[in-house]
Image 1 (cartoon, rainbow, N blue to C red):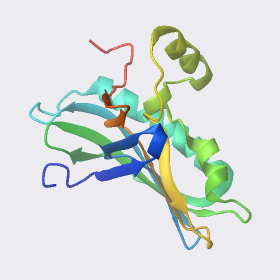
Image 2 (cartoon, rainbow, N blue to C red):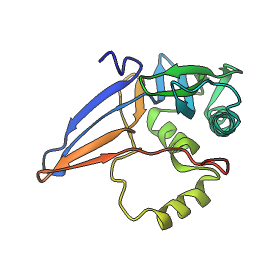
Image 3 (cartoon, rainbow, N blue to C red):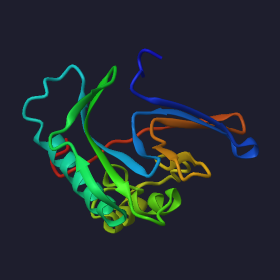
Image 4 (cartoon, rainbow, N blue to C red):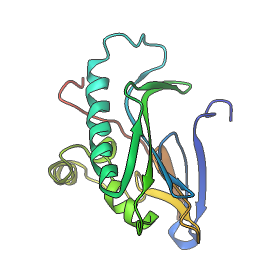
Length: 188
């Protein structure tokens, strides 16, 4: 637990469909009393590397920040976000993180927001439609629930959804583990 103190652990037993589990540092969004919270989590490097001249990571992060800003602006007002990312240090990796906060417009609920936000460029690439087509050509496996959303919405429209990364599924006595990374033109 100490190793993943800034993460959310999850375990769902879907019976015949398997047991889906994992750990994620990525909150897609939360809604509490009409206030919307989200975060851009993109741009990753090894924790033991100095965070100097991380232009590739900053570029990747900026793409996700712009995407979230544009999308969140469509369904909320009074949008605030941190102008400079902070570091989210995990045991082996460090992520760049930017927090968003806004007020939801009337008539917007959590299900509307999932379809407006997910997948973010951190998961699908950008521009999204072109990137998803290319991913489907390149990947020779089904992602299943990997990088999907998990969460809840209550009767007062409070909600919390995460992105299911660093995950696995146990089904029919087989274990499948999933992980991924953001790739930009500067990736090595």
